[in-house]
Image 1 (cartoon, rainbow over the protein chains, first blue to last red):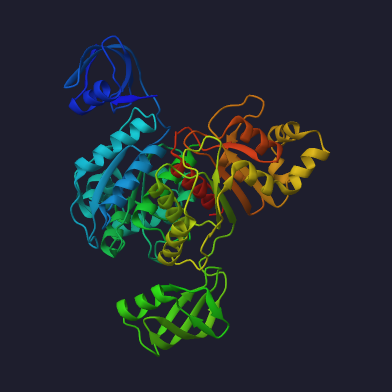
Image 2 (image 1 turned 180 degrees about the horizontal axis):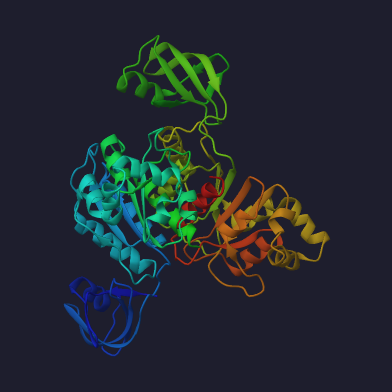
Length: 269
Length: 269
C-alpha cells in the first residue's frame, strides 16, 4: 500500500507538494482518475481521486476519510538529547515512529556535547517512516530547548503542587516512595531515565512504573552520552518526574530512547 | 571503562590481536605494567597487567577473572532473515547486542530478496557493541541457512513429538489452542513471528506468550520483507514453533527483530 503525505487538505480537495507530486506522477505514473491514499500526519487517512496529475502539483478529490488510522492506544512524548552522531538520532526517530510515538522534543542537557539539531531532517525521516509503517500520525518535532526549560514547561500542575506543598525535592521523593506518584499526578506520567543512583530517590524499572500507571499520556526524558546532571535530575524530581532505569544493560542514548518507546508499546499491547 | 576483546586467553596469559594491540598501545598509549580489562566473548571479564606492549601483539598476565560479567537472565537466539540493505541488519545486530541476546542465525526465506550475508562484518559489529555496552558475551553468529533447514535443525524433541503424535499441523495447532505449548515444550520456547493471519492457528502477542513461559531459553524467527511463506510457517508450527505477532504496528524486518529482543529483555526485567 502506497501512502502520500499532505498538509494541504481542505475537506474535499487535497493537494500534494512538489516532492510528493513528482513521486506520484513520475515514479508511480499515477494519472487523473486514479485513486490514491493520503495521510494528513494528524491521524486521518484520506482516500482521494486524482483530478490534476501535474508532477509539480497533484490535486485530488477526497472520497472518504478515516480518523485514527494506524494509531496506538497511548500518547508518548519522548524528550531525547541529541546524539553526537546525527545518523543515530535519525535512526532512533525512524524506528520509534514505526513502533509508535507522538511527539519528539530534542533537549540539550548540561552534559550534551551536541547542542544543535536540525529538526527539518528529523521531520523528513518521520514522514517517510509513518508512510512506510502505515500510520496516519506523523510525530511532532519540537524546536530544541534546554533540559531545564523542558522540565519547567512540562511540570504543569505537579510543579505547582511541589511548591505549594512540602518543597520540591520532598515532593519528588514522596512520589517515588509511595509508588503512586504517577497515579496522583493524574493525566500524565512523567519519567526521567538516568544512569546514576541517588539513594534518596531510588529508581524503579520503567516496566514496573508503566504497569502501575492507568492513564495513557506518557513523557519520557532520555539524557545525553554524559547522562543528565544531578541538578537536572533534582529539578525533574521536584517537578514530579519519576526516576526510572531501563534495566541492567548499558544502552546508548538512541537505544535507550527506542527501548523506552518499546516499553510503552508493550505496556498497551 | 575501556574493554579489549581476545579469544587468545590461556588461564594466565592473554594476547591481543593486531587490531586490539594497535588500539591499546598506539591510541590509548598503554605500556607494560598498565592494567587492562579484557572480555573473552564467552561471558568472562579478565583483569590483566600488560607484560609486552607491542602494537603488533600485546601480551598481558591475567590477574583475576569474573564469569557471567554483564550478562542477562535469559538465553535468546534470534533467527533473522537478511534485509535488502546490509546496514539495517548490522544496525539491528548492534542494538540487539546492547539490549542483550546470545545467538544470531541469518536465515534465508523463500521470499528473501537478499540470499547472502557476510557474517564477518556482523561479528565485528557485535564485538564492538559488546565492548561498548560492557558485556563479556559476544553473541555467536552462525552461517546462513535456509529457513527450512533452520526449523529442521531447531525442531528437536518437539518435532519428534509432532510425528509420534497427532500429526504435524495438529501438533502445532494444539500448542497454540491450549496456550501451554511453550510450557509442554520444556526447556526452549520457539517462536515464529509472521504477519499473515491463519484462522486455524491464531497468533498471540509475543508479550503474552513470553509472560506464560517460565523457562529462559528462547528462539525467535523473524522473516524477510516479503514475510515467511505459508509452507515455512506450516513447517515451523509442525516443529513446535508458536506463532506470534509483535503488536499492531507494521515493523520493518530489523525493527521487528529488535522489538522481539526488547520483549525478551522486558520479560526478565
